[in-house]
Amino acid sequence: MLGPRLSSPRFLRRLIPTTLVAATLGAITIAAVQQQSPAEGMQQYAGALLSTLNEAQKNEMLLPYGSDARVGWHFIPKDERKGVPLREMNDAQKAASMRLLRAALSEAGYTKATQIILLEGVLRELEGSDRRWARDPDGYYVTLFGEPAESDSPWGLSFEGHHLSLNFVCQGDKVVDSTPQFFGANPAIIRSDVAGPLGKGTRVLAEEEERAFQLIGMLSDAQKEKAIIAEEAPSEIRAAGEPQPPQEPPAGISYRDLNAEQIETLEKLVEVYATAMPEQVASERISAIRQAGWGNVHFAWAGATKPGIGHYYRIQGPTFLVEFINTQPDAEGNPANHIHCVWRDMTGDFALAQTPAAQP
Image 1 (cartoon, rainbow, N blue to C red):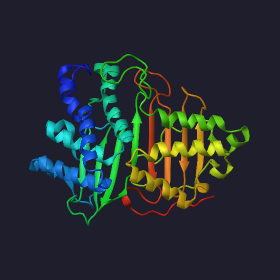
Image 2: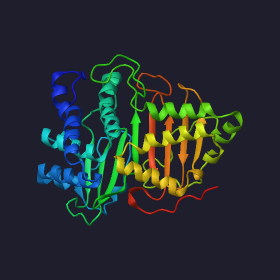
Image 3: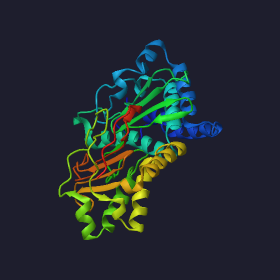
Image 4: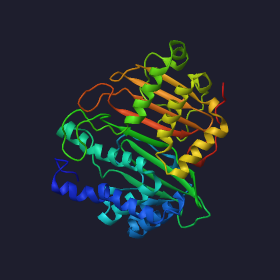
């Protein structure tokens, strides 16, 4: 378990193999198989992880592909989740789990994921002994669905804990789906000196917020009338924890009503989310948007248009949905310093077909 100080020697001995050194190990091993597709790399590392487990662990981690648990996801803190947590793994199993996660994400996505895990230690320090939740960086769970070794059959991966829910379906050499993709950060900006590798000023999800403020700030008053759908931000993203995204028609301002500079900013904001995945998966996401038509993409905003006050945005097209919200205070009480953001598949999360929402 995590000690009282994030920088304690005992903590660092346990955390480094699972997060920091694993990033280096992951980069080396991924480079060695760079000719593989992301799905093939994930299949290899899933098999390697399974080979380290005892029978009891395997029974907890490896579930049928058709299990209801496959489409159950959430980012809130929980005492227990599906799968096997890092805290119940030895160092070799933890390293294998992090290599699998590294294979599933881009470098940018993996960096975000590992920093979100480290934020649990920051929360532990800021909340003190009266906290409700353990705030344990080892409280992240790995679950596999189906048999990764059977390349002709679909299989799934879930890596989940507080503020992190990453879900994949692979078949053969293809990542069939990679949603829901959820990242969260509390604090969004670390405003105090804290122990450990994440120092004051760390901002894990900076681009997701900064580029959106840039875009809303570029809009004319007439454009803002279309883009801003509510004076106050909602309390949470929609359909949090539900198996499929909401199928409401897109709201806000159309891509077609933006000028060239605004379009460039919007496309870069979408790419921030898409490129959390490996290059092949990110390219497929962007290609799907182009094929469905960027002109069918809408950008909607709610709440304040400056930091420190609750704000929300949504980007939606026929193939994808992005939602971002920052309304909650952080652990120290700083307002609007707690981010939730998600990328979802409007054609169906978890590789389950849905009818996309009608375009206006």
